[in-house]
Length: 69
Image 1 (cartoon, rainbow, N blue to C red):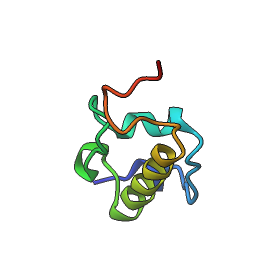
Image 2: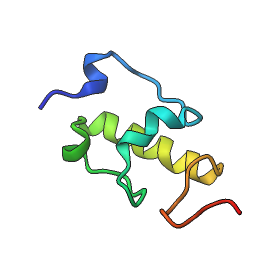
Image 3: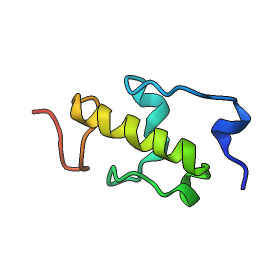
């Protein structure tokens, strides 16, 4: 398996870049598996931590039904 982030030599992920993080979550905003995301274990952990931090900072929703009214 070839990791997309290893090929691009990415060593830091910014949690504020939600457009970059969006493809790594499912339609229900669950964090995708490393097999689905085609990432190595190291980058899957980095993606998961960035998504969790973005959720905590209210930049990404936890679930699909969370909308700002």
